[in-house]
Length: 226
Image (cartoon, helix red, strand yellow):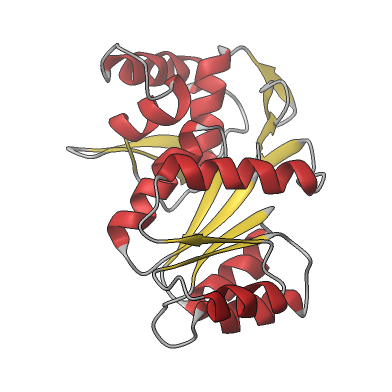
């Protein structure tokens, strides 16, 4: 699994790439403008950047140059322009690959895999922490205030996914596709069942400083504090 920074001002393209990346097990960070992309890059330290060239304000070439001043993280440029000079410019300023619109999301993910094979993701801390919560990224073993918590692997994956982005509300459909996979034939009640059981286990734990909030009509959100 890698963390991908996806940058595109076209919301439809951004959401499609996000869905495909998550379905393949990647974590994602989304940005819709050049300045926002650089802020997200500094904050999240992604393993790879998928970067649209035609961005409002600071374009993708400028963003790529700024990234290269501080990091050698792989960058794949995405553009509607297919002229040779644009491709050459992108590669000259440090891009690792170049995808021309229109493209298939499967092709983009294949290029991501190819680049990551050449430049594996940097090693990251194996334990994710959010207040009293600790989740082992490899085994998904969970601790709260230092005490082991008996959650199923799937429940721990849901908790980790929500805790990583506490400001984001995840729909049941998003969680189902991200964690069960796009080919899962069940329904969204599988998500509700896992979260119900998780809440039952977490309910009376001493030292717990978080909860899983239901956003009615939408989905679920990680919330700090009781």
